[in-house]
Image 1 (cartoon, rainbow, N blue to C red):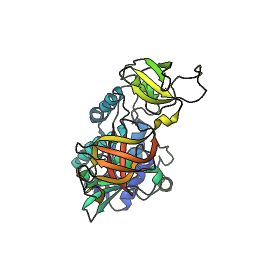
Image 2: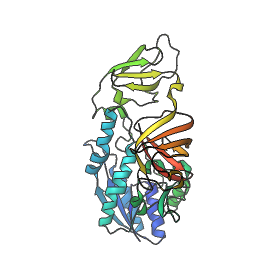
Image 3: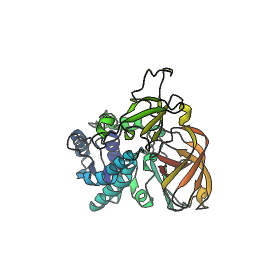
Image 4: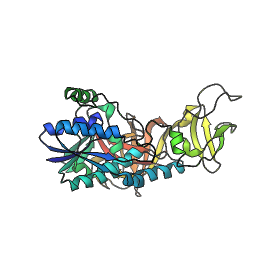
Amino acid sequence: MRVVLGMSGGVDSAVCAKLLQDAGHEVVAVFMRNWEDGTEDCTATDDLLAAEKVAKKLGIEFHSVNFVKEYWENVFEYFIAENKAGRTPNPDILCNKFIKFDSFLKFAESLNADKIAMGHYAKVDFNDQTQLYELKIPRDLNKDQTYFLHALNQEQLSRTLFPLADLTKPEVRQIALENDFPNARKKDSTGICFIGERNYTKFLSKYIAKNPGNIVDLETGKVIGKHIGLSFYTIGQSKTLGIGGVKGFPEGKWYVIQKNFAGNLLIVSQNEEFLMSDFLTAKNMNWIAGQLNPLAPLSGGKDSKFSCLAKVRYRDKGEKCEVKVLDDNRIEVKFKQKIRGITPGQSVVLYDGDVCLGGGEIE
């Protein structure tokens, strides 16, 4: 097959190129430039050069494509709008949905690709019984990226290979070292792409005006400080709140509990129990198998209930819950026990064993 691989300049995609080549595929490497802001570029030149060097070493065709406009319109503008509304969006999910598995897929088609490949730690299987493609948890549970891929659909999965599905990160590193790849020891990228190592608040203030107001203790209603603008805080946050040595309160951490936009108040507490909840609603649900998921737990369709595991953030192990499917592309999730820090704007992602069913945006 002719496989077009998204090559980032990191070790994961470099090893993907080698694995695909060893499997006998014709590999084409493509570097995506997704972000520019006129000052700093997180898809730095050294990433492009690293990707080029690996492609040259393996003797494979190499391209660079610019998706800056598409990224701005489909990912970044939404990110800013959600922050302004007081929610905490996850741009990596949108990047996968609109850029890596849409714009990139279309570009790959122009290169006559049979399939595309990505260096994500995830697995795609075809279920002969349901005749559907399934997104599944990979072997390396610590690197599992299915949470960020839950917005994909059947067409996208049918065209995608994840060569790292059955490898662990240490094994990937070892393959890179054995092949003397120039990026074999390169650190993994962390954080949001367009922010990178920069200060989050400083970056966000370039796009969102500060709107100072009072910080208020949840239980007493006492004003204990000033905030710079509700958009700059997230539920559960305990750092950089600027609260300390408040008279009448013990020393210790303060946590963001709520954001009151009507009064421009940041509601905080020293009691983490206020962050615990056993219920959420989510909108804009994506069922990987389709609008009415034909997998057994969902066969009832509208208003049906089923049990599964749910994650409300990337690093979660998954919590037991009961899901009620509503008729407006929404769900209600009732957890077996209370969990910490359910955050509007983030995603809840559902799992049936090792199969990712899909997910939606927490309301």
